[in-house]
Every structure is written in C-alpha cells, then in structure tokens.
Image 1 (cartoon, one colour):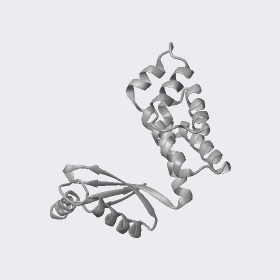
Image 2: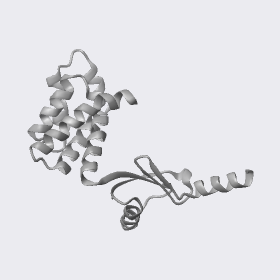
Image 3: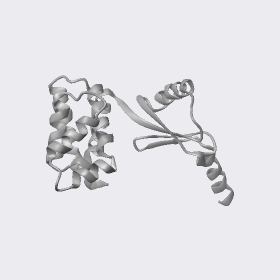
Length: 179
C-alpha cells in the first residue's frame, strides 16, 4: 500500500540516521526492528492497541514484555514514538524500509527464493553464492515453499525476478506453441 510506505518512510529514515549517528550496530538494530514489527503485526496486539481503554504505556508494556530480547534505549524510544503517534500498524513497513536502507549502505539486498520443495542448508548456501554472482551483490535469502512451481526456483530481488521453475518453462513452451 502506497500510503503505508509514505507514512513509514520518515520513521525508517529517522531511525537509520539516529543509528548511524550514534554508531549503533545496524545488524543488531535490524534484528530488534524486525522483532518489533513481528510483534506489532499480531492481530490480538492490534486489537488491544486500538482499544480506547488501553493507554500507550500499557501497549508499550505489552510489547516490551513479549520481546525475546532486551530492547536497547534507542529501540524503546523508537517504539514509544511509534505507539504515541498511533503508527503501530505501520511498524512492519517501517522495518522493511529500515532494512532496505541498511542493505543499501552495505551493498546488499533481500532476496526471496520460491521453491517447489524445502531446500537443504548446504544447497541454499551454494544457491546463494551463485545468485550473488548473478545479481552482483550480497543477498540475504529467505525461502518460501510454493508447490505450484513443480520444480526449480523463482528468485525475487527487489523488482528483479529470476524464474527457472518448471512452471515458468511450461508457460514459455505454451506461449511458443500458441504463437
């Protein structure tokens, strides 16, 4: 949604600038931002946060109580700002944009590998090395199983797609035969 991205951008940029200005480890910051985004996307938390009977302090207490890691002061301040401004539902998009800024600084990208089957860790490591050569940058891979691909993989890196799936090849053959 374009409006969520527009709302999230200033928060992500401000957090990124604050982290770089204070010399915060960007990898660690990405970890806690992603964790906060996961917590904020939970439907029950959103229901509680949207209740007029619940204060911002109570919402903060719930989130920090659920977090697996001890949140640094910067994380708590960021979360406080987000909750007090009523932007909790936008936190997942803030995390996405923050991660994109960190990746841009590091010359890396997030990549999603869609596969018909589970990929063994060693095979994923080899695929990652091949994809990094193909795309010319470091990739942070995540895997999603999609049985409709039949075989092979489909890789999405930003707006680039590399589709070597059996399904894509069958579609190409179909198009060629019908042409």
